[in-house]
Amino acid sequence: MLRVDVSKQHGEFLLEASFTSEGRVTGLFGASGAGKTSLINIIAGLVRPDRGTIAIDGETLDDTAARIHVPPHRRRIGYVFQDARLFPHLDVSHNLDYGRRMNRLADDPAQRTRVVDLLDIGSLLNRRPGQLSGGERQRVAFGRALLSKPRLLLLDEPLGALDEGRKLEILPYLVRLRDEAGIPMVYVSHDAAELRQLATQIVMLRGGRITAFGGVKVLPVVRSPD
Ligand SMILES: Nc1ncnc2c1ncn2[C@@H]1O[C@H](COP(=O)(O)OP(=O)(O)OP(=O)(O)O)[C@@H](O)[C@H]1O
Image (cartoon, rainbow, N blue to C red; front, side):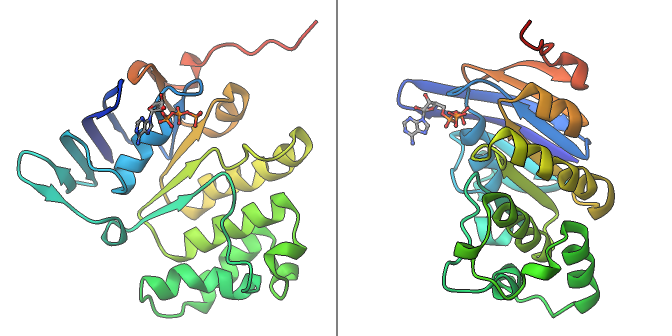
């Protein structure tokens, strides 16, 4: 369970967010500038809240009143960005190993095989990121994050840089992650259709405030152009 109750002033912008989610995929929905990235940077520990608490499964990661701030690398939280941010000089296999090594986790060949199969990246292992399509790079980034065995996975518009065709190609892999990887996710998007397919819980942000919380039915209805 993820518990968030924080505020943060960024210049003129005030973020104030409080919610609890048990969803397998918590969708953070809002227009550009709503505060989505600011909020997940706080959950990741990259930004300290001015006030408030963050807890996962009962473990406190931030509590400003108690002066608790667990640093990002001790949170066991994976983060996937819009651009995959793979290491260009390492092949896919070594990129996949990176998160595990950084977290000093023992090699787990069975888990590695499961993740490689889940994301269908077995044929890419010897290639470097420059030899992959944008969608393939994102699949590798998901794999690298999963292999660090996070207890929560943060995804900030992971399909944002892809065209519609590629998005449709990747979405089924994310649905598989949701249903088979067993790691709760916070998934940032301004695309209601994407969240409708993926999220189990929605947090809607506008101007730094939560304006709706609930199932995907709180999302605006997307109409196709006539
Ligand atoms: N370090 C900072 N200093 C000052 N203002 C900031 C800082 N970080 C974010 N902001 C402001 O906070 C607001 C929310 O930004 P944020 O990146 O969280 O929005 P977002 O919902 O993720 O938007 P997008 O979808 O465009 O990425 C914006 O007005 C932004 O300019």
